[in-house]
Structure formats: structure tokens, C-alpha cells
Length: 277
Image (tube, rainbow, N blue to C red; front, side, top):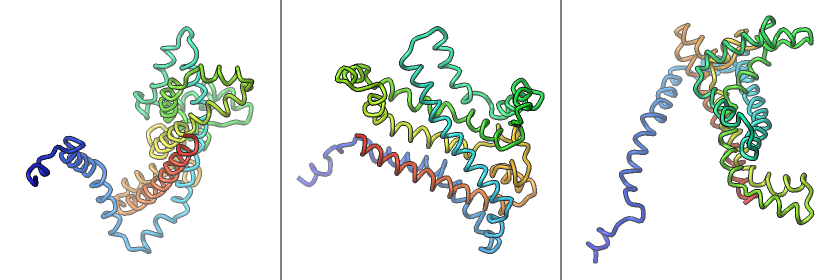
């Protein structure tokens, strides 16, 4: 009986080797680099660490990176939901082309995106020349940072919402309307509850992508300290100054801030999933 019990197949075949490979892969790809980051930062004393991460220039960079990323993710949630709805619910000429263009920020090098946005939004650019008479300057301002982050994180929201919208049966909406529900009430009571978890996920993905962005922002921001300098750029500047410990200290702060934000968003996603289930 003991031998039979030992040789009894697992409920999940291959769980042991699969778990081992997963942990090994995660260790090499995620845990080991993070551990090296923390060890490099440990070379600083607490006073040196706090002086580096609380410097007004660093605080301004944190504020711009987190704030601009949150604004860009919120904008993408609104317009990403609209675009995903149109692509799923309507058939029109050029739909496939529009669907393919959405993935362009995935394939386009971020530096190329930054140069293109700067050329368009500069005061002599195609769009910037019309904004200047209105007193709006997009390039080399925090507004330009938000625009760049919105551009590179937009596909994450659309691609997260599309599969969920495709699973919502239009007959459910028709049934609600046939029972006397207005269009607004149908959207609020039938459609939105099913979209809330996907919307939160899309927001989290867009936020995470925007916080770590460097290439597209470094051109359009102008990189002015205390105004348009983002945290990833400040890390690069310290590396160029051979201040490796200072660079890793700022990177650790961004790591903690990003992890805290994602943890809060994941908790919100779990709560919304239970509430609207």
C-alpha cells in the first residue's frame, strides 16, 4: 500500500519539474537583478541614501514620472475603451488597418516615437504651429511627457479590453433594453460591471509601462531639471557620472513606488472582481 501510495500519479502531472523551471527562470530573470540592485545600494550609508533619494531634483523627477504616468494611463482607459468598443461592435472599411495601427507603439522603437512626437509638437511642427497661437506649448513641457507616455501605453488598454468586449453577448443588452432599461442604464448595469476588472488591469499595465519609459520621453521633454526631467533619465545621468550607488538608490525608490502602486491596483482589481462577479 505504501508503494502504491508513493507511485500514485499527481493531480497535476509534471508539477514538480514545472515549478522548478519556473522558479529558476524567475530567479535568473527577475530576482537576481533585483538582488544585485539592492546589494549595490547597500554600499551607501543611511544618511547617504536618504540624501540622494530626497534631493529636490530627485523628488521632482519622481513626481513627474508617477504623475504623468497616472494621467496617461487614465486617458488611455477612457479612449482605449472607446476604441476597443468600436473595433469589436462595428464593421467598417479600414477596420483591420486601424486594428493593426494600434500595435504600432509595440513595434516602433521608443526613440523613434520620441523624435516623431517632438517634430510634430514643436512650435514649428505640424501640430505645434497651431497650438502656439493658443498659448499651448506641448514639446519640452510636462504636457509633452504626458503625450509621449499616452502614446506608448495606449495598446495595453485596448488589447486588454478587446477580448472582454468580444465575450459580452449583444443579446444580453437587447434583453435589458426589451425589459425597459434605457441605454444609459444598460451600459451602467450590464456592460460596465463586466468591464471593471479588465479596465483596472489595462490601467495597471499602462501605468507600469509608462513609469519605466525612457526613450520616447527623453527627446520631447527637454530634460530640464526640476521641470521636465523624469526619474529614469536621472538614473542614466548618475550612471554617466559614475555614481553607480546613487543611480541604484533612485532605482530602488522607483522600484518600491512602482511595486506599491501595482500592489494597490491588483488589490483593487481583486476587490472589483469579487464585487461585480
